[in-house]
View 1: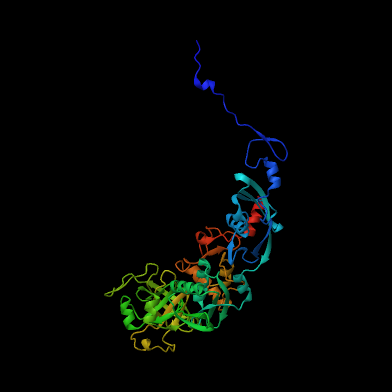
View 2: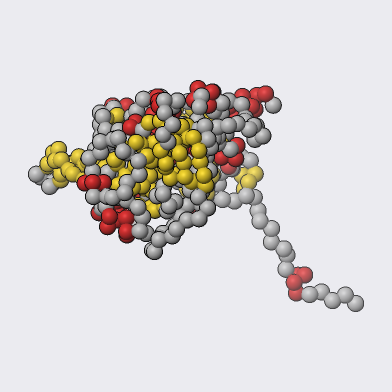
Length: 498
């Protein structure tokens, strides 16, 4: 006996279908009573949305204009470029719902950008219609305000004037390399050369202030700022100023002999008053050639107790080493500071190279170059006994040495220059050179002789890769300290060869 349930007696309900009121095809019921094809033919939800547009691109910095005034860097088919394209038709897209947007590939040099956009909108009686269309943008070359000011060459809002009153400009060559390493020259509108230094021009005060703070960290300098009123709007109470920052560098450079005030020498660890400047970085590095004591004078300490050089490298004369003896036992003074481990104290007997062979009277010298000098070598030094130096602190001293040796002279500078297998980058075509070619060559020699001096400088391989086993009698830069100077052109050629 079969049992029939109540649910079996109720017939199943199936959804009926209707005919499209336009084409008569069978469709499921909807509020518009039309099929999708007929609905698309009758209703266009993209009506009012522009299918063509323009993009403004700066031909110098390759940035795009993002309305109203912002210039944004954007790579092809990137999120940033897509946002700029959609922002161009933002007002027209407010009537529809944006579903998807993507790029259609175009030839890179065609100056065309195509964007495929999918939108959705509710039409007659609650029916949602989705439609896809393409918007084509044409890229027009333009120049952004920043590049326009740079091309003008004369526009600037703030300037930084860097000055140094010294006979040679080795400090400026070092400053140029530090600026290149940290890319602090990118926001400048112009760099001009002046008799005692350089002028850096900026379009905004913030960039000039940032560069001034960088100089205060890179070198022991001080600065003063001033403003000049250009215009004044009485209605809106706005003022237009031009700001200038005057930065003064200490007149002490590498290989200068200085005479410290007695109070300052005692404050630095009971140093001698006659010292030699071995390098100038963020501090002035001094060494006492008679005891190998070293001291670092920062900017704030120097400008509280300023001191001058009693001679420059141009005043040095050449001496020949006749005999040398290493000092093994040294006397330490009370309160003595740090002693250098890179130098060796020695007693030397020297004679002027111009008087060599004329007499046998040698001059006794105590020097810090015992690790470099040997009999027969030449060294540059100051003949303090026969020189005329005007310095108040020097006049008060007693028991001054007759000769002060500064640095060793390496023979055959032309051969040394030919064997140099490294180079430095420069700012612009001629760089920020404030001295002749001779001064720049001496700066390169200083880098080769002092490893500590080239720590903050990027050195690049010049020509063929040097061999690490190449032994030379000249100081040189190791291969580990060199960088490979690659460019985009080199990368493209390497890919083509592969």
